[in-house]
Amino acid sequence: MTCKTVATQPFSDQKPGTSGLRKLVSVFQQPHYLENFVQAIFDSIGDFKGQTLVVGGDGRFYNRQATQIILKMAAANGFGRVKVGQGGILSTPATSAVIRKYNAFGGIILSASHNPGGPDGDFGIKYNIDNGGPAPEKVTDAIYDRSKTITEYKIVDAPDINLDILGTSTLEGMTVEVIDSVIDYAALMESLFDFDRIRQLFTTGKFRMCMDSLHAVTGSYAHAIFEQRLGAPKGTVQNGVPLEDFGGGHPDPNLVYAHDLVEVMFGENAPDFGAASDGDGDRNMILGRNFFVTPSDSLAVLAANATLVPGYRNGLAGIARSMPTSQAPDRVAAKLGIDCYETPTGWKFFGNLLDAGKATLCGEESFGTGSNHIREKDGLWAVLFWLNILAVTGKSVEELMKEHWQTYGRNYYSRHDYEAIDSDRANTLITQLRDKLPTLKGQKFGSYEVEYSDDFSYTDPIDGSVSQKQGVRIGFTDGSRIVFRLSGTGTQGATLRLYVERYEADPAKHNDDPQVALGELIAIADTIAQIKSLTGMDKPTVIT
Ligand code: VG1
Ligand code: CO
Image (cartoon, rainbow, N blue to C red; front, side, top):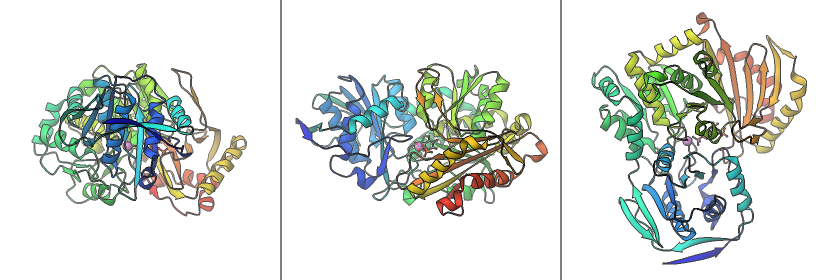
């Protein structure tokens, strides 16, 4: 075995987005492309000599090859040990759990999350720091800067490691430990939730669940936790074998892409509870029988019922949500007398609040929910949280949600995505919108009057770092909001996200279709931003 230094030239496009670097597989397969980025990470994170690195991915195409490259580079760069998931597989929340449990220096996650996979799909890589969470912007900025000047990288010339057999081996003085992908994560879940109560729920025979892993990483976790440990019948988990191309679908748990599950849950003789997770297992969608729970509402319900769950029995320190997430959780926080923090989109912004003990639960409207148990959002954790609440209360998903609205009022909410639009058109739309911002206050649109309009800027309350231009917000005098952002996770063209929210206190008006309840605001958004004419699309690609 020899350690070699390979000369290289920088790529100009290695700027991490909302969650790591995501590109088409073909981009990552260019000579030196992955290696450059990995070396840029190693050059930017400080002294890790002799320390432990955790490596895993969501099992998508190129996961195995990339894992071998990273192991050889970690050895050449002086890590003492790498813990790698069996077969190169670790979900994002499991990686976070393993980093924390074993006091690792950091971790590398190979995933493009909810983006499609396969040879023609996307690949991705992100770095997590020692708290188990996504690297904050100062680290990702340093990685990007380094990627622009890099001239060489270090790698060991050695045969591949067998990733399928548990156990340790050595690579140029570094220990490689192939670990069980599920055990540590499952043990953490068992420490938080009342597994006995949930097991009883499943074994009554009166409660049926359908978990759709969308052929992605949670398959192995869901089988082990729901079917093996909690006694749910075989077949509870569907699409539960991780595939390199996710069966050709988008591993994105929403009403459009999780169509198999939607068919089951809105079909005849539907189960009581349905859930889906995304490519890397950090997202969740929750469904009841013929009933969809909006992610923002899900966070609010979990917060309101948290003390029913053993891990949260003593209550919450605070809640944090991303800016475009609805204000439903704020109402729960107000009632509980705790703070609710509003951060930019992306889980990396929750890390400081969690580390400082200011927030216990966090969530994003994009089907992300999590807590201080790790530093990532956590799909199966959210599913278990719901199961625990259902088991203790004996209520249905729909009953819980409707009772919640009766107590707190309903925040009607919807997100419209316009995917793969021409980047120039998208930038024009946002620029024109920004130019309008100073003129909107006081203007009337139908029954709404603009109270404020700005481009969201966030000052981290812990380290004072400032993140600007995090989304255009237009707020109305009745508390309704429309928000516009461009996605930072896509790989082709641009994706415009429109977020719309309106509060309804009257219980007699809680049962409308959100698209109808929000209809006027959706039309106003188009009037102000000229979405249809500027994108050339007459309707969104995805509505959630
Ligand atoms: C999207 C979501 C954001 C989420 C991010 C990563 O980002 O909106 O809330 O944190 O994906 O999720 P964007 O920039 O495309 O809107 V995951 O599960 O894809 O890592
Ligand atoms: Co994800």
